[in-house]
Image (cartoon, rainbow, N blue to C red; front, side, top):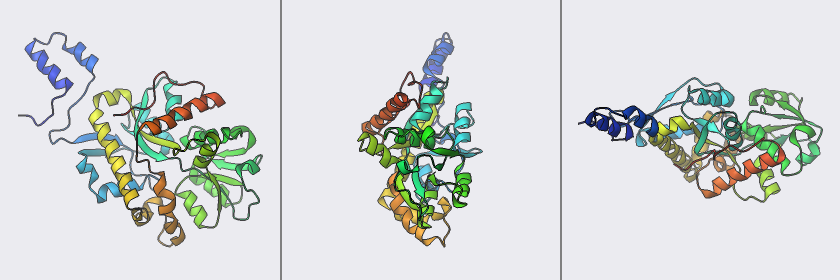
Length: 338
Protein backbone atom coordinates (compact mmCIF):
# COMPACT_ATOMS: atom_id res chain seq x y z
CA UNK A 1 0.00 0.00 0.00
CA UNK A 2 1.24 3.51 -0.81
CA UNK A 3 2.57 5.60 2.06
CA UNK A 4 1.06 8.75 0.51
CA UNK A 5 -1.60 10.52 2.46
CA UNK A 6 -4.91 10.66 0.61
CA UNK A 7 -5.65 14.10 -0.75
CA UNK A 8 -8.12 15.66 -3.15
CA UNK A 9 -6.25 14.58 -6.26
CA UNK A 10 -5.84 10.94 -5.22
CA UNK A 11 -9.47 10.74 -4.13
CA UNK A 12 -10.64 12.21 -7.41
CA UNK A 13 -8.45 9.85 -9.38
CA UNK A 14 -10.07 6.99 -7.54
CA UNK A 15 -13.47 8.46 -8.28
CA UNK A 16 -12.52 8.69 -11.93
CA UNK A 17 -11.58 5.04 -12.06
CA UNK A 18 -14.87 4.04 -10.48
CA UNK A 19 -16.93 6.30 -12.67
CA UNK A 20 -15.08 5.68 -15.92
CA UNK A 21 -13.20 8.99 -15.72
CA UNK A 22 -16.17 11.19 -16.60
CA UNK A 23 -15.75 14.75 -15.41
CA UNK A 24 -12.52 14.08 -13.55
CA UNK A 25 -10.56 16.77 -15.41
CA UNK A 26 -13.08 19.40 -14.45
CA UNK A 27 -13.12 18.22 -10.85
CA UNK A 28 -9.33 18.36 -10.61
CA UNK A 29 -9.29 21.89 -12.00
CA UNK A 30 -11.91 22.95 -9.49
CA UNK A 31 -10.11 21.41 -6.53
CA UNK A 32 -6.56 22.42 -7.41
CA UNK A 33 -3.58 20.38 -8.46
CA UNK A 34 -2.59 19.19 -5.00
CA UNK A 35 0.23 16.68 -5.21
CA UNK A 36 0.99 14.34 -2.29
CA UNK A 37 4.22 14.32 -0.39
CA UNK A 38 6.99 12.03 -1.57
CA UNK A 39 6.81 8.34 -0.67
CA UNK A 40 8.86 9.01 2.45
CA UNK A 41 6.51 11.84 3.49
CA UNK A 42 8.98 14.57 2.57
CA UNK A 43 7.59 17.97 1.62
CA UNK A 44 9.64 19.74 -1.06
CA UNK A 45 9.92 23.44 -1.89
CA UNK A 46 12.25 25.63 -3.94
CA UNK A 47 13.75 28.35 -1.78
CA UNK A 48 16.64 30.79 -2.07
CA UNK A 49 20.05 29.74 -0.71
CA UNK A 50 21.41 31.03 2.55
CA UNK A 51 22.17 34.77 2.25
CA UNK A 52 25.30 35.46 4.35
CA UNK A 53 25.44 38.89 5.92
CA UNK A 54 21.67 39.27 6.25
CA UNK A 55 19.47 39.32 9.36
CA UNK A 56 17.80 36.04 8.39
CA UNK A 57 20.99 34.14 7.59
CA UNK A 58 21.11 32.59 11.05
CA UNK A 59 17.95 30.58 10.41
CA UNK A 60 19.80 27.93 8.42
CA UNK A 61 22.33 27.37 11.20
CA UNK A 62 19.57 27.02 13.80
CA UNK A 63 17.64 24.69 11.49
CA UNK A 64 20.77 22.55 11.08
CA UNK A 65 21.69 22.53 14.79
CA UNK A 66 18.22 21.41 15.89
CA UNK A 67 17.49 19.28 12.80
CA UNK A 68 14.31 21.23 12.16
CA UNK A 69 14.01 20.33 8.46
CA UNK A 70 13.72 16.64 9.31
CA UNK A 71 11.35 17.41 12.18
CA UNK A 72 9.02 19.29 9.82
CA UNK A 73 9.56 16.78 6.95
CA UNK A 74 10.97 19.46 4.64
CA UNK A 75 13.36 19.02 1.75
CA UNK A 76 14.41 22.53 0.75
CA UNK A 77 15.76 22.81 -2.78
CA UNK A 78 17.97 25.89 -2.67
CA UNK A 79 17.82 27.74 -5.98
CA UNK A 80 19.97 30.59 -7.35
CA UNK A 81 19.74 33.80 -5.37
CA UNK A 82 20.53 37.42 -6.11
CA UNK A 83 19.14 39.48 -3.23
CA UNK A 84 15.62 40.46 -2.14
CA UNK A 85 14.58 42.08 -5.43
CA UNK A 86 15.73 39.12 -7.46
CA UNK A 87 14.17 36.69 -4.98
CA UNK A 88 10.78 38.38 -5.20
CA UNK A 89 10.92 38.32 -8.98
CA UNK A 90 11.86 34.64 -8.88
CA UNK A 91 8.86 33.94 -6.66
CA UNK A 92 6.53 35.70 -9.08
CA UNK A 93 7.92 33.77 -12.07
CA UNK A 94 7.93 30.37 -10.35
CA UNK A 95 11.70 29.92 -10.04
CA UNK A 96 11.12 29.90 -6.27
CA UNK A 97 8.15 28.52 -4.36
CA UNK A 98 8.75 30.56 -1.21
CA UNK A 99 10.31 33.96 -0.57
CA UNK A 100 9.82 37.00 1.66
CA UNK A 101 7.38 39.83 0.94
CA UNK A 102 6.15 42.72 3.01
CA UNK A 103 2.52 43.90 3.05
CA UNK A 104 3.16 46.97 0.88
CA UNK A 105 5.21 45.07 -1.66
CA UNK A 106 2.64 42.28 -1.82
CA UNK A 107 -0.14 44.82 -2.30
CA UNK A 108 1.76 46.53 -5.09
CA UNK A 109 2.43 43.34 -7.07
CA UNK A 110 -1.10 42.04 -6.50
CA UNK A 111 -2.65 45.21 -7.86
CA UNK A 112 -0.42 44.71 -10.90
CA UNK A 113 -1.82 41.31 -11.79
CA UNK A 114 0.00 38.87 -9.51
CA UNK A 115 -1.47 36.88 -6.63
CA UNK A 116 0.99 36.60 -3.73
CA UNK A 117 -0.05 35.84 -0.18
CA UNK A 118 1.95 36.12 3.07
CA UNK A 119 1.32 33.00 5.17
CA UNK A 120 3.62 33.51 8.14
CA UNK A 121 6.04 35.95 9.78
CA UNK A 122 9.73 36.34 9.13
CA UNK A 123 11.18 39.64 10.39
CA UNK A 124 9.96 42.68 12.24
CA UNK A 125 11.35 45.89 10.80
CA UNK A 126 15.07 46.37 11.46
CA UNK A 127 15.82 49.58 9.56
CA UNK A 128 17.91 52.00 11.65
CA UNK A 129 18.68 55.66 11.02
CA UNK A 130 22.44 55.95 11.61
CA UNK A 131 24.71 59.01 11.67
CA UNK A 132 28.43 59.45 12.44
CA UNK A 133 29.38 59.84 16.09
CA UNK A 134 30.23 63.52 15.62
CA UNK A 135 27.14 64.35 13.58
CA UNK A 136 25.22 67.43 14.75
CA UNK A 137 21.86 65.85 13.87
CA UNK A 138 19.70 64.62 16.74
CA UNK A 139 16.54 63.53 14.95
CA UNK A 140 15.43 62.55 11.47
CA UNK A 141 13.70 65.93 11.17
CA UNK A 142 17.14 67.53 11.51
CA UNK A 143 18.21 65.63 8.39
CA UNK A 144 15.75 67.34 6.06
CA UNK A 145 17.58 68.37 2.91
CA UNK A 146 20.53 66.14 3.77
CA UNK A 147 21.98 63.11 1.97
CA UNK A 148 20.49 59.84 3.20
CA UNK A 149 21.30 56.36 1.90
CA UNK A 150 18.51 53.80 1.66
CA UNK A 151 17.64 50.66 -0.27
CA UNK A 152 15.87 50.85 -3.67
CA UNK A 153 12.24 52.12 -3.81
CA UNK A 154 11.07 48.61 -4.71
CA UNK A 155 12.35 47.21 -1.40
CA UNK A 156 10.29 46.57 1.73
CA UNK A 157 12.88 48.55 3.70
CA UNK A 158 12.37 51.68 1.57
CA UNK A 159 8.56 51.47 1.67
CA UNK A 160 8.54 51.02 5.44
CA UNK A 161 10.94 53.93 5.98
CA UNK A 162 8.78 56.13 3.76
CA UNK A 163 5.64 55.13 5.66
CA UNK A 164 7.19 55.62 9.11
CA UNK A 165 8.35 59.09 8.02
CA UNK A 166 4.93 59.96 6.57
CA UNK A 167 3.06 59.18 9.79
CA UNK A 168 5.38 61.67 11.47
CA UNK A 169 4.58 64.38 8.93
CA UNK A 170 7.74 63.98 6.84
CA UNK A 171 7.55 63.34 3.10
CA UNK A 172 10.41 60.88 2.65
CA UNK A 173 10.99 61.27 -1.07
CA UNK A 174 10.78 65.07 -1.02
CA UNK A 175 12.45 66.19 2.17
CA UNK A 176 15.67 64.19 2.00
CA UNK A 177 18.28 63.81 -0.72
CA UNK A 178 17.91 60.08 -1.11
CA UNK A 179 20.68 57.86 -2.43
CA UNK A 180 19.07 54.54 -3.25
CA UNK A 181 21.05 51.37 -3.74
CA UNK A 182 21.89 47.96 -2.34
CA UNK A 183 23.04 47.89 1.32
CA UNK A 184 26.70 47.25 0.54
CA UNK A 185 26.87 50.13 -1.95
CA UNK A 186 25.22 52.58 0.45
CA UNK A 187 27.44 51.42 3.28
CA UNK A 188 30.51 52.20 1.17
CA UNK A 189 29.19 55.71 0.42
CA UNK A 190 28.40 56.31 4.08
CA UNK A 191 31.76 55.10 5.36
CA UNK A 192 33.50 57.27 2.76
CA UNK A 193 31.71 60.32 4.17
CA UNK A 194 29.52 60.96 1.12
CA UNK A 195 26.26 60.61 3.09
CA UNK A 196 24.98 62.47 6.13
CA UNK A 197 23.02 59.44 7.30
CA UNK A 198 22.11 55.93 6.29
CA UNK A 199 19.04 53.81 6.91
CA UNK A 200 20.97 50.63 7.60
CA UNK A 201 19.48 47.20 8.08
CA UNK A 202 20.78 44.50 10.35
CA UNK A 203 23.44 43.29 10.80
CA UNK A 204 25.11 46.32 9.14
CA UNK A 205 23.44 48.66 11.62
CA UNK A 206 24.90 46.80 14.60
CA UNK A 207 28.35 46.79 13.03
CA UNK A 208 28.10 50.55 12.49
CA UNK A 209 27.01 51.19 16.08
CA UNK A 210 29.77 48.92 17.36
CA UNK A 211 32.23 51.00 15.37
CA UNK A 212 31.09 54.19 17.14
CA UNK A 213 28.31 55.48 14.91
CA UNK A 214 25.13 56.77 16.51
CA UNK A 215 21.60 55.46 16.02
CA UNK A 216 19.06 58.29 15.84
CA UNK A 217 15.99 56.07 15.71
CA UNK A 218 14.67 52.83 14.32
CA UNK A 219 12.00 52.76 11.62
CA UNK A 220 9.85 50.71 14.02
CA UNK A 221 10.12 53.35 16.74
CA UNK A 222 9.12 56.07 14.29
CA UNK A 223 6.10 54.02 13.21
CA UNK A 224 4.99 53.56 16.83
CA UNK A 225 5.59 57.23 17.57
CA UNK A 226 3.50 58.38 14.61
CA UNK A 227 0.63 55.89 14.93
CA UNK A 228 0.44 54.88 18.58
CA UNK A 229 0.61 51.24 17.46
CA UNK A 230 2.42 49.23 20.15
CA UNK A 231 2.94 46.17 17.94
CA UNK A 232 6.32 45.57 16.29
CA UNK A 233 6.36 46.94 12.75
CA UNK A 234 6.06 43.96 10.43
CA UNK A 235 8.74 44.02 7.72
CA UNK A 236 8.24 40.80 5.78
CA UNK A 237 7.03 37.24 6.00
CA UNK A 238 6.89 33.91 4.24
CA UNK A 239 5.15 34.56 0.93
CA UNK A 240 3.93 32.19 -1.78
CA UNK A 241 1.84 32.37 -4.93
CA UNK A 242 -1.78 31.43 -4.32
CA UNK A 243 -1.76 28.88 -7.16
CA UNK A 244 1.22 27.13 -5.56
CA UNK A 245 -0.42 27.34 -2.13
CA UNK A 246 -3.56 25.62 -3.41
CA UNK A 247 -1.46 22.59 -4.31
CA UNK A 248 1.07 22.74 -1.48
CA UNK A 249 -0.70 23.94 1.64
CA UNK A 250 0.91 21.33 3.87
CA UNK A 251 4.36 22.28 2.62
CA UNK A 252 3.71 25.98 3.22
CA UNK A 253 2.47 25.26 6.75
CA UNK A 254 5.56 23.16 7.49
CA UNK A 255 7.85 25.95 6.29
CA UNK A 256 6.04 28.54 8.43
CA UNK A 257 6.24 26.21 11.45
CA UNK A 258 9.96 25.65 10.85
CA UNK A 259 10.59 29.41 10.74
CA UNK A 260 8.53 30.06 13.86
CA UNK A 261 10.36 27.34 15.76
CA UNK A 262 13.77 28.66 14.68
CA UNK A 263 12.92 32.17 15.86
CA UNK A 264 11.48 30.91 19.16
CA UNK A 265 14.63 28.90 19.83
CA UNK A 266 16.66 32.08 19.32
CA UNK A 267 14.44 34.02 21.72
CA UNK A 268 14.78 31.24 24.30
CA UNK A 269 18.56 31.21 23.90
CA UNK A 270 19.87 34.59 22.64
CA UNK A 271 23.44 33.28 22.82
CA UNK A 272 22.74 31.52 19.51
CA UNK A 273 22.93 34.92 17.80
CA UNK A 274 26.46 35.49 19.07
CA UNK A 275 27.43 31.88 18.41
CA UNK A 276 26.55 32.20 14.73
CA UNK A 277 28.00 35.69 14.28
CA UNK A 278 29.78 34.57 11.11
CA UNK A 279 26.36 34.08 9.43
CA UNK A 280 25.88 37.82 9.79
CA UNK A 281 29.26 38.54 8.27
CA UNK A 282 30.61 39.63 11.67
CA UNK A 283 34.20 38.52 12.11
CA UNK A 284 35.58 36.98 15.30
CA UNK A 285 37.67 40.08 16.06
CA UNK A 286 34.59 42.36 15.99
CA UNK A 287 34.03 41.77 19.68
CA UNK A 288 31.83 44.78 20.35
CA UNK A 289 29.52 43.88 17.46
CA UNK A 290 29.25 40.29 18.69
CA UNK A 291 28.36 41.59 22.17
CA UNK A 292 25.61 43.78 20.69
CA UNK A 293 24.07 41.15 18.39
CA UNK A 294 21.80 39.42 20.95
CA UNK A 295 20.43 42.71 22.27
CA UNK A 296 19.78 44.19 18.85
CA UNK A 297 18.82 41.22 16.67
CA UNK A 298 16.85 38.82 18.87
CA UNK A 299 13.84 41.20 19.01
CA UNK A 300 13.53 41.39 15.20
CA UNK A 301 12.59 37.74 14.66
CA UNK A 302 8.85 37.38 14.12
CA UNK A 303 7.62 34.62 16.41
CA UNK A 304 3.85 35.11 16.15
CA UNK A 305 1.20 35.16 13.45
CA UNK A 306 -2.07 36.32 14.98
CA UNK A 307 -4.69 39.05 14.99
CA UNK A 308 -2.29 41.64 16.39
CA UNK A 309 0.03 41.06 13.42
CA UNK A 310 -2.86 41.17 10.96
CA UNK A 311 -4.00 44.48 12.46
CA UNK A 312 -0.50 45.86 11.89
CA UNK A 313 -0.55 44.71 8.27
CA UNK A 314 -3.94 46.31 7.68
CA UNK A 315 -2.86 49.59 9.26
CA UNK A 316 0.28 49.71 7.14
CA UNK A 317 -1.71 49.18 3.95
CA UNK A 318 -4.45 51.65 4.91
CA UNK A 319 -1.99 54.41 5.78
CA UNK A 320 0.18 53.70 2.73
CA UNK A 321 -2.87 54.27 0.52
CA UNK A 322 -3.82 57.37 2.49
CA UNK A 323 -0.40 59.03 2.09
CA UNK A 324 0.07 57.93 -1.52
CA UNK A 325 2.77 55.27 -1.12
CA UNK A 326 0.29 52.77 -2.54
CA UNK A 327 -2.28 53.62 -5.21
CA UNK A 328 -4.89 51.19 -3.94
CA UNK A 329 -5.56 48.14 -1.82
CA UNK A 330 -5.55 44.68 -3.33
CA UNK A 331 -8.92 43.07 -3.98
CA UNK A 332 -8.33 40.43 -1.32
CA UNK A 333 -6.12 40.28 1.81
CA UNK A 334 -2.41 39.81 1.13
CA UNK A 335 -2.05 37.57 4.21
CA UNK A 336 -3.62 34.33 5.33
CA UNK A 337 -3.65 32.07 8.39
CA UNK A 338 -2.87 28.50 7.36
